[in-house]
Length: 184
Image (cartoon, rainbow, N blue to C red; front, side):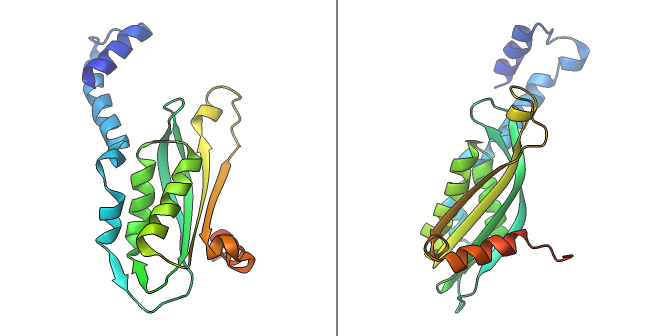
């Protein structure tokens, strides 16, 4: 990847041998390896390491999980928060694994719609809960820095599976709790 970034600098009209850019190809390659590390991670293995048998059937929500991803169309960042909820059916997942799962899929080239569904589907398939809900609210630099240049727009996507899809009451409870702030 270092050679790619060196060629990119030349294509931009830069001198990759000037003082400020000499180490840039190496740094950029390292950064991109980090930003796309989700390709080297297995979501099923991640979750199965922290599944616990528990008699619980109440809604579990992890709110405001920060996400950082790269738009697959322009290779520009998008970032925001992810809210995840599920209703266990005999199995729960360690809370940090939910955040790690969101990060795993976000650290791939993405579109927000797919990212939302991947998180929901993987939790549904692994835990087999009553239902799963995922909401992502994000700002996209491909829309802010170029194109229409809209600074205050946010994209919101949701995936509702099982009882979160089938039950209006369950869906509404999740939507309410994912927006509720303790200071309110």
